[in-house]
Image 1 (cartoon, rainbow, N blue to C red):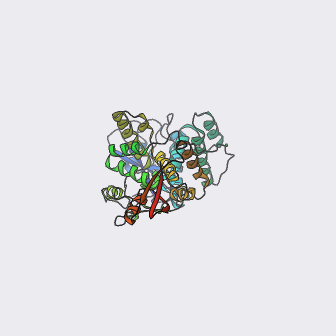
Image 2 (cartoon, rainbow, N blue to C red; image 1 turned 90 degrees about the horizontal axis):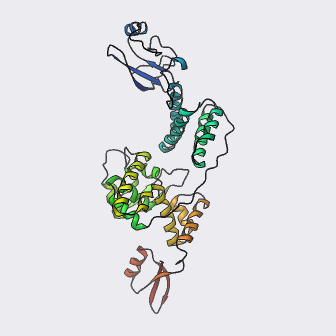
Image 3 (tube, one colour; image 1 turned 135 degrees about the horizontal axis):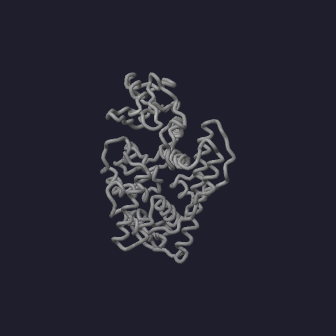
Amino acid sequence: MPRCPQCSSEKLYRDGLRYLIEGKKIQRWLCCSCGYRFSESSEETYDKNLNSRESNTGNRQLCVSTKAKKLGTATEIKTVAGEISQEARGKLLQFAFYLNKEGKSEYTIHNYISFLKRLSRHANIDNPESVKEYLAQIKKSINTKANYTVSYTAFLNWQGKTWKAPKYVARSPIPEFIPTEEELDQLIAGSGKKTAAILQTIKETGMRIGEVLSLTWTALNEKDNVLTLNTPEKRSLPRIFKISPKLTAMLQAMPKTHERIFSGTIAKDAARSLARTRTLIAAKVKNPRLARIHFHLIRHWKGTMEYHKTHDIDHVRRLLGHRSVLPTQIYVNIEQVLFSENANEYHVKAVSTVEEAMALIEVGFEYVTEIDGKKLFRKRK
């Protein structure tokens, strides 16, 4: 591994290959520490190719560790519309390393860098006014623009800079519909092994997709059917869940090749896989609602159903990991609308043995009172 000729760092990123006319390949490098870009070759190759009209085509320059030159904007590889400059690429790489050192989750780092890459393709990220102009003209939602703003603010803070950020306030929209449990089960049954396990995990726990993908094998207690989340996102609370034997078996069926249960899967890839699957299943069962189900919608379903079953908003808050009850209020509103017609209608059961009572409690019934030696239980319809 070579060293950076600018700062002598060994933290280098492979930046593609340089192909010479005579067929030789030269590795290009990008320094993670200072953003310096260079190509390594022998002294003889440098002298031969730098001075040869045939092999030194266009405006490209060949820099080597012994005679490295800083590539300015004019001498970089030609930048076409939508391409990120090498200087911007180096800065984003350094920023990603900084976020990692600051303890940010992989999901957060991925989102920040993705938004900044898009900005780099259409605006000058060294000029806040250029970024403002781009955000003002793009046809994106307020939430998307707010995410751009947050990412760019963090990027500027890392450089010790500030800007007067445009006021895009992210909103938490109410979901347009809540799927039924039957629809979720259809989607899970028709999905592949990994996607089905992810969907079932969210259905039973209400986790976010990033939280599911961060689960490690040590978080699963297969003996007691318990799943522990110690890597919550968005400053949520850690949680512990009692899961079904079915979900335990689905998780146990995942390959044990990595410390994480869903190793090698990122949120973006999982979402793409789900999008393909749900479209096929929706067409097969002739239910277009299935094609609109996404991971976070299942979390909304879980919050709504838990509130409908318990009418305990603090229980729902703790289940979903909210630090405040305010974001949990949305499920109260959804439940009241979805179940307004039969809000006061119950299934009622009367039992006389402990075993019968335990069986009812396991399926969501709650104890009401005792009359003539019979214990009465109820569950909302």
